[in-house]
Image 1: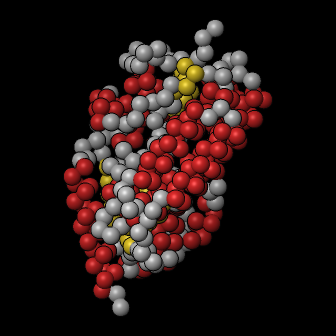
Image 2: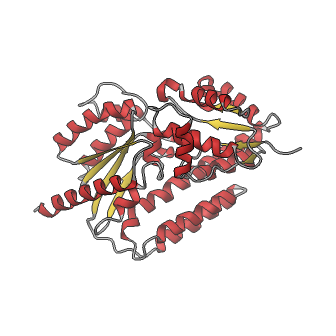
Image 3: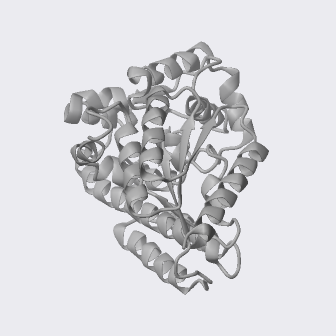
Length: 359
């Protein structure tokens, strides 16, 4: 009997950890979504409401690419979360049904409302013959792979701008992702991590003692997806003499370790309650970066993301009170590389000049 073909919409680099979970833990064939391209966005935009956010269009386009691939899919697992009050998953499912696709559509955000019972039902829909015990044993390993990915990517983010040979760290990271993708057990996951960690430590750097530091904050999907934000971290990191890039928002921090109450205490001088999805983390991150003496902050969001739009007014107050410049970048399906590049160049020139004027 052929294994069920399961796919998740592309989400930066986390698909390699999902592959491990689906194939090792669920006993299914994982269909890797193609890397995001302009074609993905155009495909998703074609069938999406005009004013829906770019992540909706990216993920819909990613689903369509998998459905149109050779062999198609038996099931799509969607994790739309709380965006638009959790309605995005239902809307994407209806669009796919209207287009004639009959693959099982599993909305983890919706099923997660029922907690363990909902996740059990989702697992049975992914593979009716699944061994729940084996899946449960595999899940911690998959989450460990996610932690490894976030840690390695964080190291690249910090030091990429100071490489003696440009691209050295990305080459190590890409090899690491390939090895995670082919891993079959915890031992091979750990081996890939240790190898990559040593290789990153061996990369030759020319890093000054006190480099420019910029913190990246913003909406969950766009801030973490390199294609969706037009490689803002890489572009800014390589500017001038190099920039040390920090970003708290990762799957590990937001989904596995998050303490919103701590963030609400941090932002209490500005906000008395949670403003929705990732705004508490956005505002708390901005305050922490400012108080740590960072040179600037970049706020990243998709066009029309209501919670992050609301957060911008508070960010302006944080910027004024703490004397830290903030660049606001908003993305939609029409955003071009040249516009982002130009704004980042101007931002870099500003923070570099500000640093040079300091006594």
